[in-house]
Image 1: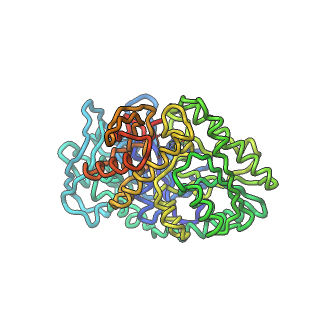
Image 2: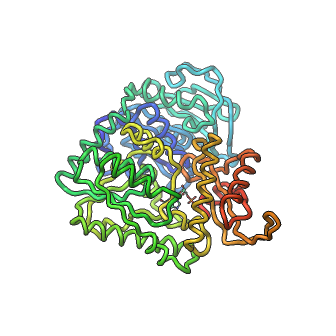
Image 3: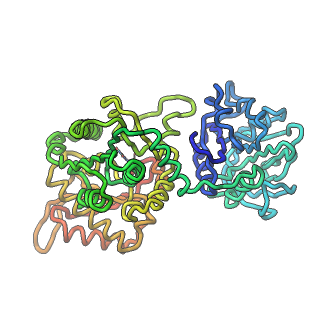
Length: 516
Ligand code: XMP
């Protein structure tokens, strides 16, 4: 916590959608942070001094042994409190009401009827659609509480102790399936808690620049630039804060998309005048990857080599005191999983993790309080070219994980050409911004075709496009068949080595976005 703004504490009980509460609040200009329910001790609440508290949903039942509770001190803060779903049950249970367990879960859309005037529902219609997802339900209320809304299956769909400004709802106002949800949260923060909502990107930019200057002093900072939106925004922000104390290192792995390396170098060196070392390491990467097919081995080789090269270049400029990284808020939240349990490694993601220990540098992470869409907003605030700001995410290991099997220079070149045509068609059709990520995958499979009168025996290319909000889950994108047909024809006609194109219709889960 590091901002002078009025801030709201979101206590996490482990719901899949807790982050959405934070997003909705930030969208209405409220600065907030998510903290696990069991990490609020040791004077944290005094230091954080929230102006309001939201208790999230969660997978537990208040009847389970050792199920989570809010620290009692939360109720002594004398600030407005809103409980959501499990948060409602916690409030009831802790303040003297009764929660009944139930074997049947209520899940999905429901209608609530507002039965008592409350500032929580200001501006809402008497009947509203909401998204319910709960098992247990409230049976009797703690003293001082009234029912303010009910639904067919939830007689206590919303309750309030207006005198103490404690509110609770059985449904999820943070999800888009509750159309009035943003208004309810706004009523809570702006109306009931009286917050101003003055968290803006312009304010963030100014505060963050002051913070960076204070942290770095006269030290030298080095920043790994990948061409992605996060590292680009970090570089421009740091340059504004500390000028030539910053050096960026761009490692061209030879596994970038077509023309990407040139675009990054010309934007940063020529347009922004940011000191930039560009390392052409394509041959080195391809040499180390020769003969390797296992996806995890590929990732490890690329991550390791990236660190070696970065380390080498950093020493060449006389070392640095700080390493700048584009860590985002979801990474911060995920790294303190609320039950402290280890999560399963599906893929080992490659970034510059491992560098700080090796190079004994301190970290500068100016984006660690932001969500991806806020990073884009900050990029726009900083005047960063739209071509960079709106760019689809691109993984660190690059095309290496889009060529299942062995990586050869020939395969990389084929994939770069095909991928460029695919993206070109998407842009021409005006769909680029509707898609979270689109890319082509070159399969290590050859099939028979016929072109003209000739038999061909060439590679298969898979096209992938997904919609998502954060990359954690994704749906495949639905193209018109005409559009897919046009893409396929162009790719087969223009790219030597491909004679068949297929479209991937797998969502995540069960698939992942990348193929490796
Ligand atoms: P998956 O394939 O895990 O991808 O569903 C989710 C998102 O993460 C990106 N991704 C990576 N990004 N280094 C990165 O910087 C990686 O190693 C990496 N692997 C996957 C992927 O492109 C998608 O946006």
